[in-house]
Image (cartoon, rainbow, N blue to C red; front, top):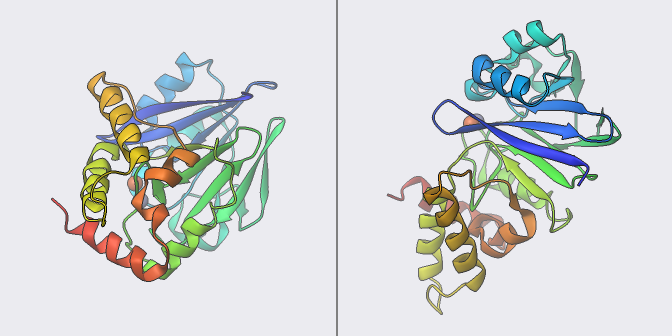
Length: 248
Ligand code: ZN
Ligand code: FE
């Protein structure tokens, strides 16, 4: 695969993604929460940084931006209509814009819901989706600013992407999401027998028991097991999201 994706642990459960387009060596960092651990990983992976891509304005996605930009002199790219809440942007992008990434390209998808200025980046050459806090493995982001309808529509924008798309989300929430997905599955008529979720869950528990990240997952596997991608309409999605907010 021409794009190598490495998750860099930041804070308690964030992943900052280090993406390298192998034919040119071009490196992009997604959503740097902290400068120090991110820079250490960049150095260990070859010491190159060509661009910083941002998905949304939350502090755990932008905290390391200014220090990394100063150190590597690289441009920072983010959603133009949310520029007031983001670090200074060198390039403002919107839905449908394409960011050159070495020999590959990152397509901007506007996905409001978690915040009203959230974007994702799809790299068809990966294929790879950097989705920030919109889609998580077996879950989705909380609705801090948007409505369930907006988030349902945003997740729907991923429906045309290939099954082998690597889902590079920004938090290690998968085991907690798995418990909720199993709960939701147990409430269905047939009762807890979604084979796709069973396979997915066993893989996640094995990875976490070994101390490994559970991500990236594959979009096709998410489609089979992630309850939020399986919701048939916005009302069903809203009920699921509310259930997760209250699930212990
Ligand atoms: Zn967030
Ligand atoms: Fe976050």
